[in-house]
Every structure is written in structure tokens, then in C-alpha cells.
Length: 189
Image 1: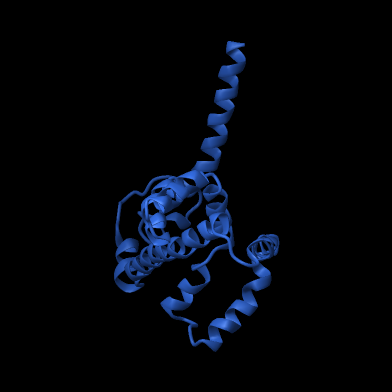
Image 2: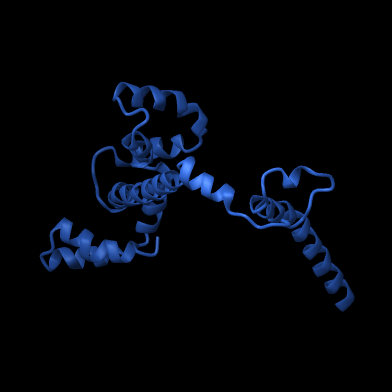
């Protein structure tokens, strides 16, 4: 049994090396001088380490701007998505309004539609709003994720109604209940 475990671990380690080798070699080549990796057999490590490719990437190709754009847009999209999906998920879980179940069923049905089908209509909508090639155009599609809404709703269903009723009896408004009771309860999700 012990030999089998050792052989299994060796096999897993070998597979990991095979999978990781191209990535490690790619990083190694990035530190080689131009043309150094074009010989046969290609070297595993650079003979002379250089940062010329990284200097070119950040100084001449604008990679710093691209990284900043990605970081800023991802952060802002996450914050905005939370701002839309958390209240909506809570509303679908705990607030009673006309058509709630039918609307939620429609939204859940939309989850089975592949995202690629909506790409062209989304582009046309963004174009008609003048948001193509803008930061807002990159953010708008992420404002209200149906999956995020579904996830928050399912978690919010676990909030005991008695806790919300106790807050209402204590005189809390719906906004206060959401801020002081619901948000702390939803924090894990």
C-alpha cells in the first residue's frame, strides 16, 4: 500500500512538471536576449539575464496602463455589481411585491441561455448608447449579474423572518433593516 502511494505521488509530481514546464520556460525566455531562444536545442536558462523585454513592454507598449485599466475596472465592476445584486437578491428573497415569483423565474430561465447569444445585442445596445470603447461600456454589462442575484437570493432565504420582524417591531425602517441586519448577515456570501 505504501509503495502504491509513493508511485501515485511520483506520477502526480511528473504530471505537474510536464504541465508547469512550458510556463517556467516561457518566463525563462522572457529574460533572454532577443533571438537567444531561436537556436536548436533551445536553452532552458538565459546565458545573459536581461530586462529589455519588460522595459519595452512597460515603457513603449503601454502595459502599465493596461494593467491599471484591468485592476480599476475589475474593482469598480465588483463594487457596482454588489451594489445592484445584493439589494435585488434580498428583495427577491424577503420582500413581497407583485410579480416577484414570475420575474425571478424569468431571470433564472435566462441563466440557461449561453452568454454568446447576447453578445451582438449587447454590443448594439452599447453602440446606441454611445458606450463603445469607453470605461462605462466595459462596466454596464456587469452591473446586474443574474447569477449573482440568484446567489444572494438563495443565501438571503436563510435569514430568519423572525429577525426581520423583530427589527420592524423595534421601529427600524426597511433601509435600516437592510443596513443593520441584512448586510451583516449576508457578509459571508
